Amino acid sequence: MGTVMIDELMTEEFDAVARRGKRRVGWAALFVAITGLASCGVLAETRGAIQPRPTMRRVFDEMKHLVPLGLDAAKWSAPENREQILGSLDRLDRAASALEQHGRAREAGFDELALTLGRDLRAARDHYVHGHFEEARFFLTGSLQSCVACHTRVPSAIDFGMAEELTEHANIEALDSRERAWLYVMVRRFDDALTLWERAFTDPAIPAAQLDASGALVDYLNVALRVRTDVPRARTGIDRFAKREDIPVYLDRRVRTWQTALAGLDEDVLEDPGVEDVDLGEALATEAGRLAQGPYGRDGLVHDLAAASQLVRFLEADRARRMASKRNPTDDERRETSRAYYWLGVVEARSLDGFWINLSERHFEAAIRADPRGPFAERAYAQLEETQVLGFGGASGEHLPPDIWTRLEELRELMGRNRPDSIPAPATIQ
Image 1 (tube, rainbow, N blue to C red):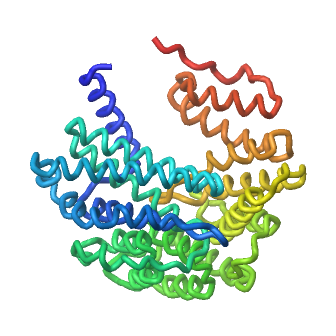
Image 2: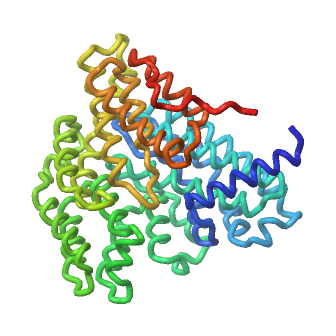
Image 3: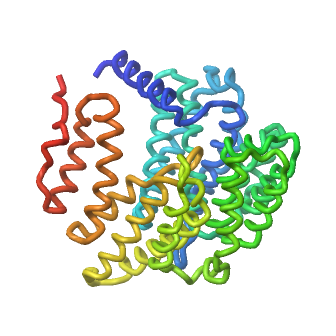
């Protein structure tokens, strides 16, 4: 394939992602993304898991030089800096490959995040090689999503010792409040992020509706409940926000629902890192579905986040048990794994929005593969198929792309289901 055609395809890829609104490009967001890449070697911890800190250490020193170049568009594209930047992108690509190997030992969500990180970094490098400098920065910022999402999946008490070294290379105060909070999450200063959000909740200069529209409320509850598992702090933070006088009617009703939900959570169970209960996760997810009457599913957010915490904990422990075992899983074990993945897919399909990467499709697929002939496989497949048919065929009137079709067909074969005539066959590539 000629260079011109490669350039055209890469530009089309950039334009398509930009039109979907996947991510934004800006100097502040770029700083957060680049900083995050260095800290992404510290994946959320699991009992007994080996952390990939050496990978982080290998890229840390060069990040201190790459950050200022990435913040200046002129320096980023300057001929005299290209060899250094390309070398850094090459090393980041190799680091991402190492993290992909680590992700394979975790539950499917971590695996998908590692793969997404690798794809973004490779796209950044390829664009830079072909002189698409802004596109390279664009995909580099996208890697931030994978890093943040990875750091917020399971309870965490690990601090990132090099956070101060990373953050001293830019004016943190110049970032807007949400970008600064993301940065704190990136470098695992979770309490600092929560404190920043809590200050914003009582800041009259920031309208209450803006805090909701920007996703700050979702961000706050995600970190407070899933990462810190600090139910009392979440209650206090939302109670303070509820006292504002500028809360619109829709948000006032939702916040009162959240307050009731937080009051009813059993903090002793949720805060115990040794508890990983699929029954509790399913019960919380079911209650969230009952509450989620609004168009975005946020009324049930508190229960959904608590459910996700339990389900991911179970799946991480389940993965560790399987890797330590020398026998095949029993029918009951396969069914429980499938059940946990199914409900995690349901939770993420309706509750996580904005900045957080949605892994629902990956979890529905994992539910099918875990127990293809079990009771949750068809339910998971129905959810997955609907998102694909409506997202591709239904919305545009075109056939499903060949790769999507192949994946669905493979899953149906695993389930022992024939191809339904209602789904269009893949389009023929000319």
